[in-house]
Length: 330
Image (cartoon, rainbow, N blue to C red; front, side):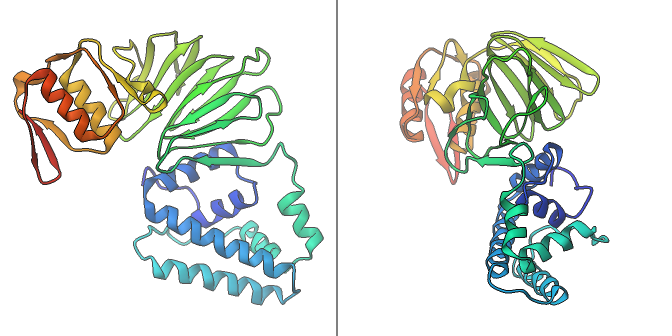
């Protein structure tokens, strides 16, 4: 996992299902879900049991202790069926979880309506996940977000107060509606991105967190350090180093999941290989160091990987060989 959660994951999941999770808690949930497919399956199973409990609550009034015990056994059964899911050291569960489960299993329809549907829109958190395809979503203020695959974003049903806060896991491109009185703030990993109205790309993976500006001005902060970046600039934090680095962008590859094009302008082969591995989940290596910096000047439409490799081979007069799942350029 990215990091150990400070409390039981079941507690967080219940708060998320009740739309009670804070932005910080939703970030932890999203990170936990993205850590493994097993975590995602566990959440789906947990959500299914939760929804079934709600349906039962509308039909019967039952003994609260028995209802809690039934809910606990069913979730425990799900864990036993998927033993690979990481479990946290048992802690004394706070009363919120028990009360929430009893709400779902026993209380009358009116009280259920209050807990599940009657909450203020301002306190409800919405989460959009992209899965295997990119997803375009419109936020409450009209801002548009394009999520790259295997990414997610969480935000309130309405932006209230003096700021617009969202939480991101993975990668997304933002086109933020201007509002000078209400800054737009993105929490990603342990960084904060603050804007008033602009367009930019945010990417977080196992190696680094990166922000690239397309239009406008963006402020990126980590701990007590911050930088302001403008178009064609980026701010980066490498996971192995805590420093916040400001630099110029060398290419426009950050656009590939929106435009379905890889535009190369004197792009070295090693850089193109890097982005192809990311785009196609491939394992391409350069078998000869003298090929690393061969420049490429062409545009690759996002077709099949084989078609792209064939064009690279013709353009640079190099060979493409396969060894199992590995692809070697020679």
